[in-house]
Length: 273
Image (cartoon, rainbow, N blue to C red; front, side):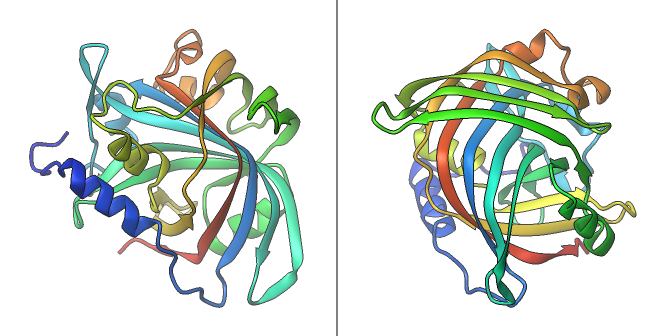
């Protein structure tokens, strides 16, 4: 953790998490979607490796004691949007597409709040061109093959596989779902702390396609998560950025899985002044 950033107490983490669970008032362009097959694949990496790709004058990179070392965190987040819609402007126009976000965990130095830095997103739909052209956000087209089977009675996935082909980030995701309920993982002192930082960042920052800094915000309900393990994982982006070698990708810090969760996305994205 950056020494300039005071770490909240356990109660403070719980209070901040409760605040983030309160939905905001919807605006005209805000979108809603139900996400299926949501997975959070977390990796521990050296902060100095992430610092090459994040404006550290604006953001701090938190570190956690993992494997006896101070490590930063990044995550790949695959899911399927089942009914993405602008619920006030075009409530009957709905879109279905697979998506994967690639992000690192940061602290906004202006507010002291935990958030995420987005490297970019792959999207399995022509909708990606609208977002790139109108909002200049770093979304990239990909071809997806999704094979996910969830067993309601066993409360776990029988299969979770995605094959993603993209010039920006190809990926192979094959996860085993233990069915075990979420618990605090190494590097975190409580479940509330881990939920706040890893599962509930609400502000995201990124470089737009015109290289200007951008940001947007989201809201989602508390997730019913289980713990997963890697069968096979690969993300070409992490090799290209010098963050992880292929063999390191087989050993994530943690994997969290959720069959369905509702999201609100506060649009449009804005420049981060």
